Image (cartoon, rainbow, N blue to C red; front, top):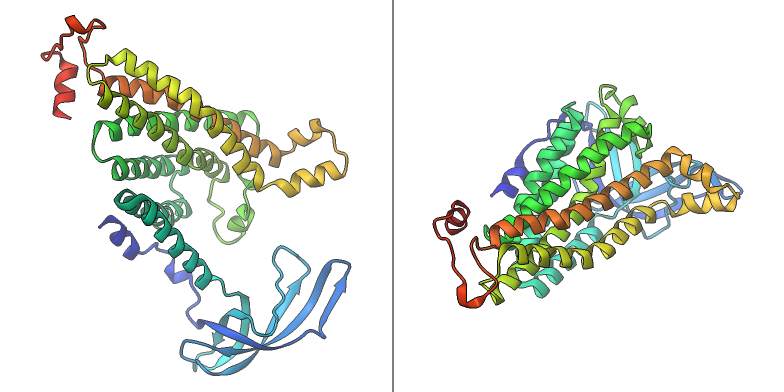
Length: 380
């Protein structure tokens, strides 16, 4: 129900979409490359593109478009006959086409196919739990697009908004997977404490290392597009703990699930034994999880690393560059959150799973049912 509600909630930025335009698919039937000039690896000029419109009000029309090349390999595209393009048709007041812009290769169809394949694989492997995980995946995407991004654009405090979104996502994801059970509650409180830790570290070290939010892709573009009120540094701070929150949830659920299984096999185990077991499991898992963050972040900057090494730039210069420092901060703060989430989850597990008054001697085991903590556990 929440996902459906989010799907139909307007972001408030729909009016910024160009009204006098039609977006559609077009089959490339011919190209004209005589206007393209190549200087080394860079291409500039204009490519003529003839497209046959495949859907929308102009379906079946064959139109001549123009594909300008800016000399930027990361943004330019070259069309080939037979490909499908995403076409934007600009209209005048009378509704006639005045400009045909083959903006990009059409990728939505294949992307949706990949998403469907992922969904089927997840459900086939995970069954009902996989279906709930898929629902949490869709809900997370909708929360980011419908709530987080619009609130940031409207100027709300990025850190507070992101904390609220992450807290809600943590609750929804973990309780969907584990239910409103001791396992779910243990994972939730452990993950929440881990996220708060990464948030605090992000706030401090971003300022201490003099990192500004302009290091993020398209950050300056936002300022020049009419959003000069945005605090890019606060957005970067929020992005640090937002990026690590998924791994934090994962580790919290790993530790919680192991403690849950332990208590199922030995219901008489005491709270401190549960905590020690949770910490031992966390030690085993945290090593690979921190490496996961390192590989995830560094994978997006492989070409930057290659460029520095190719020019023989010393490591001291390398790590003082703001772009590198920003990625190192993300990795280390996220890893620190992972290291702390294991004992936090173990501590929460000691509360939710342990039995106050349980003794080590099986002949003298007594449960103090009148203890306040046991009353809370009984209610849960």
